[in-house]
Image (tube, rainbow, N blue to C red; front, side, top):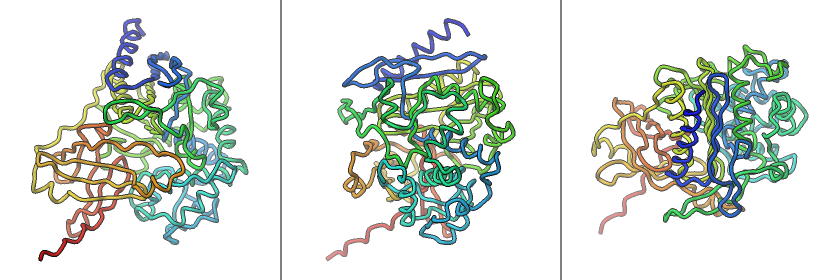
Amino acid sequence: MSEHTLSALSALVEAKAEEFAIPGISVGVWADGQEVFASHGVTSIDNPLPVDRRTLFQLGSVSKTFTATALMRLVESGRVELEAPVRRYVPELVLSDPQAADRITVLNLLNHTGGLDWGVIADTGDGDDALAAYIALMAEAKMAAQPGTRASYSQSGYNLAGRVLEKVTGQTYEQAVAELVLEPLGLSDTLFAPADVMTRRFAVGHDQDEDGTLSIARPWRVPRAHNPGGGIASSAADLLRWARFHLGDGRAEGGEPVLDAGLLHRMKEQTVALRSSSQGDALGICWFLRDVDGVRTVGHGGSAIGQFSEFLMVPERNFAVVAMSNAGPNGIPCNQAVVRWALQTWLGVTDRDPEPLPHDAARAGELVGTYDIDAMTLVIGTDGAGLTLDVRIKPEIRAASDTPLPADHAPADVGLLPGDKDEYVVTSGGLQGQRGYFTRDESGTVVGIDLAGRLFRRLPAPAATPSR
């Protein structure tokens, strides 16, 4: 790896951080059997410390890869079966659809085909019963689909998977993951508890106001019950070690066996196809699989409160890149720009967004409406020149929360893609590059929209006010 490439990475990271107004960013690349890091900026605008390769960032949903891998260790030992119903391990599970509760399997949780809605918005405390209390609240949650019929990204599903770990091991979720994964792999920078994180150098999230001013995003952490799906903090150095494990043969770097190589490989094999998703073409066991310019990539992204992470591997080229940044709404496009540059620079792989069609007012009129999931409302509108997308946390959810929730994204532009499948791409804002599609019922009426792998259901249009 040349000095020119290393300096180019550092220059690119600095340029992207400044372009997207990111206070601090940490990047790691594994290529040609070597690791290289580049960091820029500070941990916090209020208490600035330089970001480096061991600075801890919140990973958000990249945490799911640790939960899934820990469960695969239990699969190897025969303590968990992927095709077994979840109720074998969590008999107290109650859902709004009793039949669905009987049918959901462990694999359904790990590849988001359980039919569960995105998640229950609740903080069940910091005690060791946090996950158990959260699972009890799932009785109130809506179903997005019948189990096994489609993928719909679910935080609740991974929190439930964390509860499986607790029930089978007799430990807390955090203890189980530490014993099964973190300790065997020497991931000493990968932590859950704020009391542990605060003894290290860690990044603080930031939000950007409409005038571009940055402010500290609060609270720093997610509720403990969300740890299985989004509660880990880690460093670029540890994430490259994590990548090398998943690119390897199931052994730790010291040679000790951790997970059967066949099961490790199985995690990267397709279990369900995805349609028009920027996350991937398919899901393995947790991992999103995507073909980019002729090569298969394996990865996962994550967002926390003002912090964002991107984790991508190319197994056939023994390559990995990780990027973490600490400001919204531009953390996602910043990280993705760095990842795309790394793919092009090291592998000659070009990742481009698809080109949308010119605006079709008649077709757009079929799609305009309000859609929702348990916590958010999505509005598709038109400004006459194109479609617009506005996603916001529901006011009642904000009002009921004891702590501030992440800031909403500003409205964005949307373009429909070629073909007759009602697929689209977001063309501006913090969600730029996100792909999705509209769902129609048997009569051809639009009844839903997928965004970031989540199904939003269309709400009935308001009744017209009678004229006088």
